[in-house]
Length: 559
Figure 1 (tube, rainbow, N blue to C red):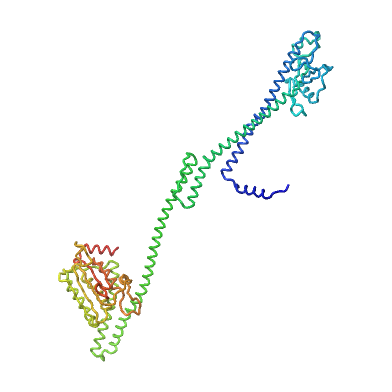
Figure 2 (spheres, rainbow, N blue to C red):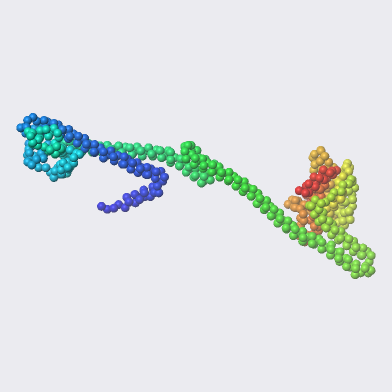
């Protein structure tokens, strides 16, 4: 017969699909094998015992027949009577019928019984030698189990000895000596016994199949509902967690180990979720710190760049007046008498101007350091705003005349008297006017205004008593991207060494610090309202600088 490889491949594919076995298949296969083993062991006892019971029933039936035969056969009266062979009903047996045979244990063969088979002789010898057993039933070989042979050994009893003695009418017997055997051959009963045994075994097998099937089905239902359903729910929970869904929770309520396991998983998910939330917050804080550090690094980079620009600029600003001082002083030393008086005075003025320039830059640096360290003291005094502005304007009159710049002073008529540090106010205004003269082209205009109350305050309380002093020029103005930069330390619109204007870049930074110390503020607008170019720088200060304002200012400086 040719081998069909396709069927083999299909079978291997089926085995491959179910292998490795799942937990459900392992449990079902294990329980099925256990059920089969238990039923086999449990039913093997009744399987064997039913055959023995059937044999015992057949043995009891043969005993009854032999007892009837015995009762009728040995109830003879008179010694002259001869024992005739009887059938199972006690009637005289037909000589041609060998169903019931009598065997007399004498030297002569009585009744002409047929010869016994070797198997029958062996069974009779066994019964003769066994004092505890008188009968036995067996199924001769070669008959297919359709015939049964029952053998009963008769032994001499007291009632037998009463007749069978030396003086009696019958042949003498010894007590308990085997005197004969009854052999009953049954064909119908053996067939019935075999059929009964067969049907008993069939019903036992059917009962085992029914019980096994019921047990397997019951266990399958129990396994699916009590074991596999919670496991599937836990597996679905694990899959959801693996996909990142930590909000899911198990709802198993079986009141057993599965519920305890589900509760433990829910608690674990709560801990994981809380930990993740903490990690998110920590990451946010870390991101904020990183962003802050990045900002600080950028600020440090900018500060380093500004420092480099400042050092380059300040060295240039220092060298220029120093070289002028040294140059003019050297000329005066070499020609102290030969110089004309006017030229010598001009040289001296140049030396003084350069010295003042150096002194101003050094003072700016010292003031800035003091302001940042909170070591700068305020000296309060009462002054008129109009007189203060006129004095500051007069200081720049010569510089303005050189560039033919018109200086206009506008002061409100109702200005109150100021109580503040006049020196610091003068220093701020000096920086404003210095920048205005520096960046205003020839034949330009500078306007100095004193406004009360300040437009920058809308309140009517004590904080509303602010006065604004503004300096407006008609220069080039400040670009929008540079409006905040110019108030930083060492920063200028043009920070290169080749710039046209001079200066250290500290004026507005120092003015900002001083304005805060005076409980005021500094601002700018470029271009001013109703003008196309130029800039306006202003200072808002309180009319009266009180002690509370001074303390608040000290706290701000320390912060």
